[in-house]
Length: 195
Image 1: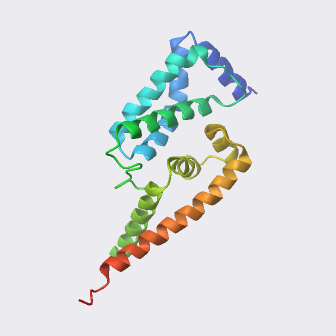
Image 2: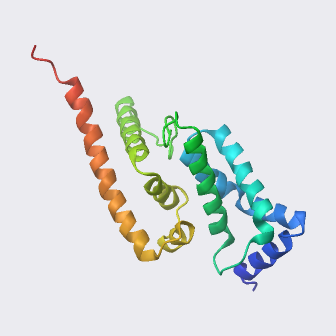
């Protein structure tokens, strides 16, 4: 049986001079990179453009790529992270994570009230995620959208597994606090005035 890391390393080495091999790498990873960027931008057109930019940069820098024993995808995710960070900086007028209208999964509700509650809860969660720092948004996307393990997230974020666990714990606490603030706000705004 072939070792997938060996196969990947050979493909990467060939891709440095062979366009077809680079195309194979593109086919292997384009969906993952697109999904990551889509959840960071919340816009399909921007995600397509930025995904193309990631692979353009990867192609430009591939001759200087050095295999350090990490999955090739970790290198692509770092490029994607930098491209998205630059995009957010360049598009300062946009929100950090405009996920309005993005469904993390389609829930089937039995009654209109349940649909309303589900949609409301999902919207609160997405608003709370958007308020987190970029690094914590990245962690949530890699953990829950890409369903990566802590070890894999550590490779992408250039952190130890322990550091990822610690960041994950702090992120969940911060997300809980953000949700509590958002849930309290509508109640305060909807309270009848005594004036």
